[in-house]
Length: 94
Image (tube, rainbow, N blue to C red; front, side, top):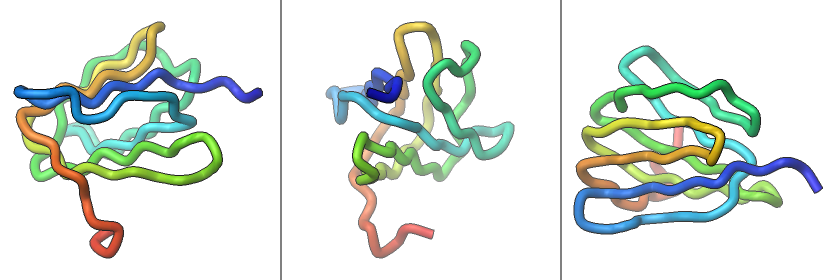
């Protein structure tokens, strides 16, 4: 089985999504970022408006529109702390 990331997407009021993923993609103030298992630890500020895309095992992808917040990568996985996060419609995926 391929190595996977533990991912948590948390908004101010609630845990929005959590689970295993193959990759997390997000736009930070430094540019577009793709996180794979084994990625070096980092802390990035999410760009506004932003979108976080989570590639699930098996190829399915979920996406959330986020505003404000940070993306943190450490040995335990990826945590996205956003002021707000709402599911993005697949139709608006670029």
